[in-house]
Amino acid sequence: MLCLTLSWSCLDVYVKLNLVHLLQYIFFFPSLFEIHYGILQAYDWGSPSLNMQHYNQTTPPVYNVEVMKVPTTMFTGLKNVVSDPENVEILKPKIHNLTYLKTIPDYSHFDFILGLNAREEVSEEILTILRKYEGDVQL
Image (cartoon, rainbow, N blue to C red; front, top):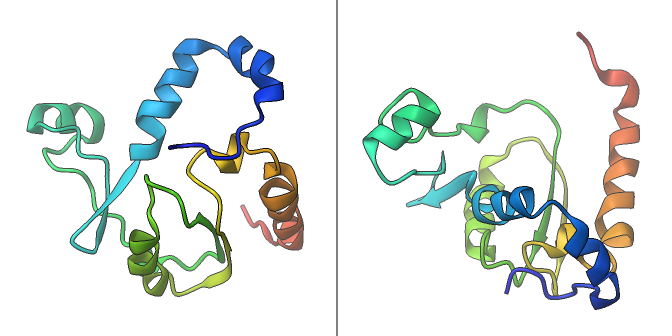
């Protein structure tokens, strides 16, 4: 299940969401990246021609997170079937500037956005973390 703590009392709000955008989000956003054999890469569209359309190359690009210098924060859910805990464990040691990691035991993929307590568990914490770096942006 993609959302374990969905607020059914907010169903009227969810129904008013643009269905086309919601479906694109549900079907494509979780697949922006994949971990295959310990390699983090963009989503494989299933054919060289589709990959070429999206990436201008026949295979999905590989993300080299080991060279990232930006401070990185990770929020994970132990019941996430899209980005499962095993993949998170593969990814964690590759992020050399991992400054914060929060694991939420009962969270699945969309709980981070639609969950009953997403504001307290995730959103407010992300804003607090971003405020720490507010003056550090250099253009």
